[in-house]
Image 1 (cartoon, rainbow, N blue to C red):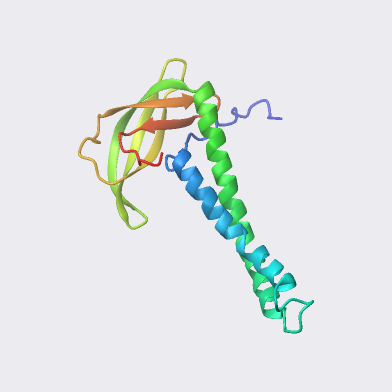
Image 2: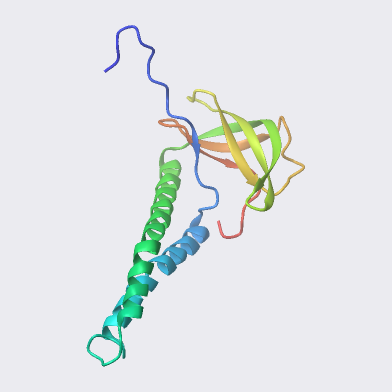
Length: 175
């Protein structure tokens, strides 16, 4: 509850849908999550049931310890990857359902690096019918001579919270 003289709460900051998490990348990331989630439990099962398991005569503790450590260390990473994939899918679905068309005018372009690769950090002014115009930033892989100040791009925005996606013309074939 707010005080009578206090300003209204600020709207949520605009957030771009993960451009790298289209259907192909989601499949790749789900595979990565499985690679993170399965080895630890697999080693535990092999340690318990394998030739060196507790029912056999040899020591089972190396496989059990390795399986337990891998499970404890890798499972949280796998769960984080799965949560990110799920959020991206839900965001894309929500934009497809309730997004409204908009335009994104590039107001600033700064070279940057994304990982070890060159990229661009774009400042965008996003506007559309029924939307409050807002400013947002967007990272784009590679360098593109067409992305200069004043370039107008196609966008889609969820007016409820500013979730948006911008068509920069640079798409990975897995998207």
